[in-house]
Length: 203
Image (tube, rainbow, N blue to C red):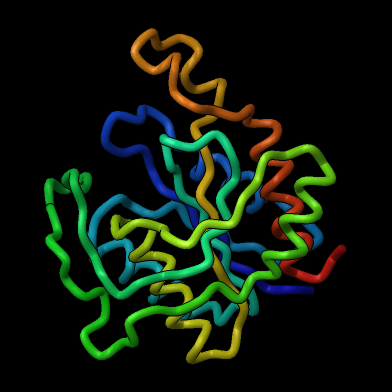
């Protein structure tokens, strides 16, 4: 049975709920894969250290991290993690990073090792909007993506990062957020299941 770590994030900034947290918790209930679900804090440095500790302890064969991008209405399969930490907004601890390296001695970038072409084809066949993306930004999502790929490079494991839109169910009662791009939580979870299946070789 494949051993996997799946991560999501707690709510942050203007978002009262984070669908990435719901996805991680959903995948953590899978019985056909040995999944450890971790919900990370939106705190620069601390989230990275929590994840690194879990990776060293568990030594998973597969690591998939999920994060929220409130500007998209599709699943975004991230291709490239860069060694830069920055932000336009503070993290949940009030910290702002200004172009600092994530790893002082790490390479400039890593590439995802998830089967992105297969995931694209499968999700599109299931009528789930999906695209590949060549920039995960430089906020916490990129920091975790870089951390995942750095560990995968060292361990020979497979990993990557997926951005998701806001869940429809999380914005319907908020007039300030009602025009935000979104996707149903049912489709988000269905997409996440397919991504895990394909990455673990179950499909």
